[in-house]
Length: 107
Image 1 (tube, rainbow, N blue to C red):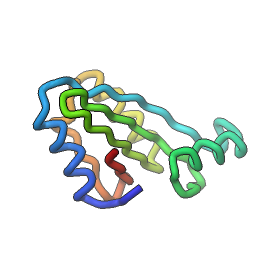
Image 2 (image 1 turned 90 degrees about the horizontal axis):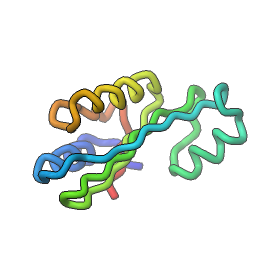
Image 3 (image 1 turned 90 degrees about the vertical axis):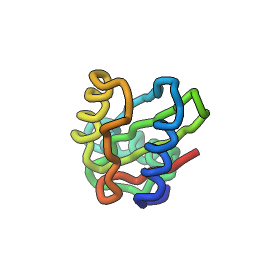
């Protein structure tokens, strides 16, 4: 995963160009909540480095332009907040994926 504003901008701006709503999934995994073995499999499957407090991950798919991206953060409560906020907003228009908080991978 790349950590950078360019990747986050590409993901956000790619959605703005389309007209279909974004579909997303949310997940989190921590060693304390799921156990070390499950957590290890989880972060390796997502190609993330190990993090002591685990990860919150948002997986997006914009069907209008087939753009897919993954945003991962070690701030799991923040990822959960974004997930619930998306239920209210329904789009990414006002959501920022700060490069100091998220690792974003497009594709």
